[in-house]
Every structure is written in structure tokens, then in C-alpha cells.
Length: 330
Image (cartoon, rainbow, N blue to C red; front, side, top):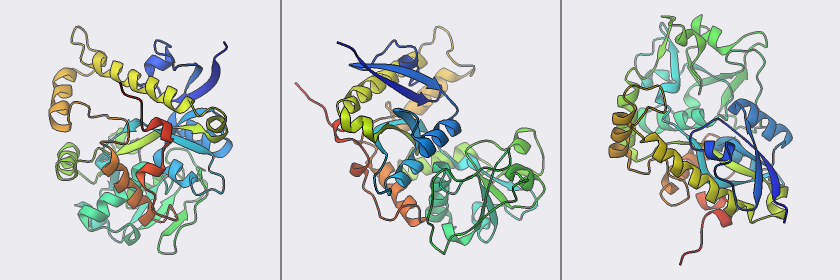
């Protein structure tokens, strides 16, 4: 019998590489794996629904659920997780010596609905006394002028937000002091170049993130894997098949990461750093599935709703294909 052919657009990750290299194959499926930058994947999937399966921003996915006919269904596969305290930058002369000083400031963000920024706005509100509507937001291209929101948003009036001029970039405006701060998933070019005018808001990033995890138990989820709704409606079995394969690929990546015969990545202390992460976060620190991630997802969904990005408060159970949240046992 012929196998179902699907195209999967995703980043180049250790946890999905076995699918890209076809050493692990989903039951009944032939995958064409497209290694694409996340911004390109998200834009093409949200705007044109180009791929049958794709990595997608968690925030963009939740935004898509408000459509009259939601175009995607997600799997509880989290291709990206990341603490985001290091994603806040400020101009050195903006009068920001602590996160609390962001109140009343002008904060840039490439798009308001970016998952990393939803998390940081929520964390600032919950833990640092900076409600999301206590700052003024500007959006636009970080390094290249002209970026737009990939999803249509209907924000409450309490959100003060505007676009920067079409010929300007957020990185340049931050370096020149035209905005006070920038929340972004990618390191802005002035900071990467060592420009003394730009620094991080959280000066001890790792210490702040460990303190956050110790207090909350949350390792933030950034991306999920989605199936285009028309594919899922015709072939609901693909949800379980893809989930099983992606889970097996992640387990293989765990094992490879702990291979001490030769370092898999160019990090001199990779092995002790991995052991430290396991001791602090737990052995399955990059867990998939609903169980064990319920509180993390519920916290994000609360932030998403509070910040005006979703019209109602979704429950974690409502996000995923039912076939991917339970399995047979013997």
C-alpha cells in the first residue's frame, strides 16, 4: 500500500533530526522535511497554510483558534522551549536599572503576539509589578524594515500600540535611544556587536531564570507542531502517528546529547551542563504531552487572554488533537 505523503516545515533541531534524516519514520507517512527559519515557517503557515504539517508559534496557534473555521490542530510536541529573561534589552540611558523601571516606557517588539513576548509581559506583570498595559508598544522589523503582524489582531483599547516608520528598524531605534527597551526572541544586532548603548534588562540572566523556575516550576513552551485541519479531518490517524515519531526522535536526541565519546555540539562543558540541567529541571526536562505541561500551558493561556490576544480563556485540553493526548496500553 502507498504511504501518505506530507510536507513538514520545521527548524533544524536535534530533537527532530531523526525525522529529517528518515532514521525514524512515522507509521504510514512519508515526510518531506523542509528546514526553514522559524519566521519563514510561521509566516507562510499563518498567511497561506502552505504545509500539511509545521512548527508554529504557540501564540499564533492560539490566535488561529478564534477563526470561524480554525485552520490547524496541534500536537503536544514542543519543538522550542526557552526561558526568556534574556530577551529584554534596554538603552543604557533609558533609566532602567531593574525590570520594575519598565513601567511607563516605550517598548519595541517585532510583533505584539510573539510567544516570547507574551511570556515576558506575563512574567513582568506577575513577578515584577509591570502590568502589560503599563507600557507603550511599538512594532516593526527588528533588523529589516517593514515587518507586519502575521496574524490579524483585535486588541483592547488599554493596549497602547503603534507601528514604527516603514524605513526604520527596532534595533537602530534602540541603539539611538528612540525607544527605551526591546523585547525580542532574537539578539538585536547592536547588542551582538558589543554596542555599549544597548544592554540586557536582567543583568544576571541565568540566575534570574533559575530563580523563576524554582518559584514556578515553569520551563516556557514556545512552539508546537500543527497539522492543517483539512489533512487532519481526512486522516485523523496522522496525529498519533506523528506524535509517536516525534517523541521517539526526541528520546534519541536525549541519548545522543549524553554521548561523551565526542561532543555533539561545540560547547566545552556540554556534559556537566546537561547533568546540571537534569538535576535542576528533571530528567525529562523537555517533556512532550499534556501531562506534566498542564500548568505551563495554563499560565501561557492566561497571559494570552489577559493581554487581549484571545477572546476567551482556552483550556490546555482544548489545544490538541485528542488522538495525540492518549494512547493504548497493554
